[in-house]
Image (cartoon, rainbow, N blue to C red; front, side, top):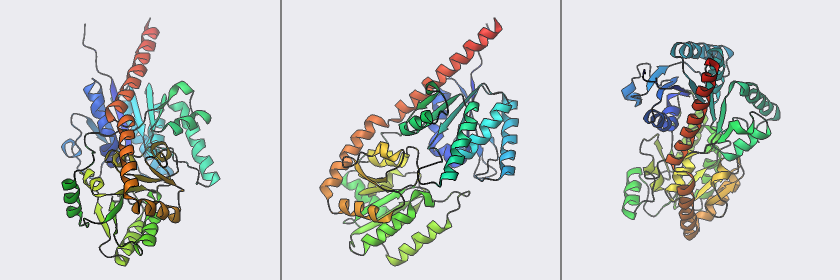
Length: 399
């Protein structure tokens, strides 16, 4: 009997950053479980290689997926992906990120890909969005839902919302969670903590509040800068540590300008690191982690901070309010407002015992809920069930 060919899967996202930061563990797990895994996204450099991307043995296909609302750019992405899907004859296409999820689902339908998985890493629409814009995005999700075999969400609230909006039947909507390597993010020793602070130019006696996020407005940088400015004038021991950069496709120069203004106003108190591979070092230098985002899925950075034993101040939005237990592991504040953010930071700044207590409970919670191995296994199980059902249907058609 001829050896059965492995099931061919293509992971699709808009940009290289998303693949490297969020999808690589899933691709590696699929590969280890016998699937033939491919990846398609727009590389950061035109001469991208498998070695530089860290993709081997994943097969990489460069495609053009512009992060814009241009119909022409969307049509080009659909065309590129349709050519790829038709040529490679995948059994499964798994789509991620808003624009890529639109283009790839349409292309997969045109190429007659049997199974289409869509992971919503936080639906693009949110409570603070103007009603017409919100309705437009909800309608778009509803229109594309028939082109989706399985809808995966990283937060349980998004899964519940998808069921209420009837994007798919309940048995085809799955809350899979997010997870990280629990051995990578751990509370630092006193020596490690001091070494991290020395590296970033932070004072040993400072109370360090910080964030890890792309330099875009929707991550709440404006509110965080304003909150820090309100507090720094009264608390000279406060320092701000910002880790992140802007993608080439991001349009957020105003954020960088605001940070530079803050650095000029408070010399030596605002530290920027850019994007770092060893991001765990940043958490180990902090006392308080903040993520005042306007919208999220189930942010990895909150999980990483929790595992490091930090109290978390986050906005009361989908995803974050699932992670942070108010008054237990951190504090929730309204999105888009600097005053409540400043008040939450001040409360933790003045109460070291509360910071330690919340941080310890945050780590305990993260260890139970956000272990990467468990999250990956839940997705492998979904793949196995869907592929088995597909094979069963194909065999029935042949009889």
